[in-house]
Image (cartoon, rainbow, N blue to C red; front, side, top):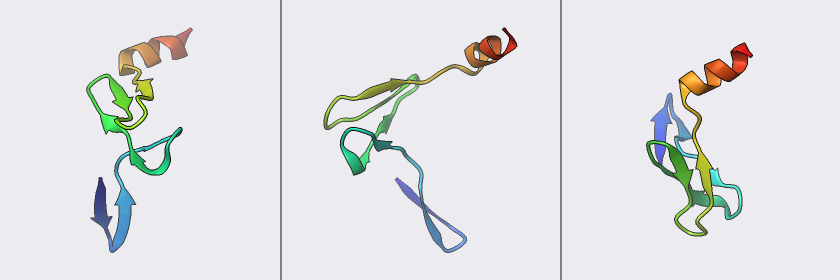
Length: 55
């Protein structure tokens, strides 16, 4: 959840936008999910994002 970088504490995961700070999102292969409220965000694939940018 956290890592130490040059003496500073850095969060590695995103907080849930519904539950607020302190509730981290679980990171899956294709999505981010909150275990508390069930909020889900779908990750975009790099190829899909590149194809959209070209249009």
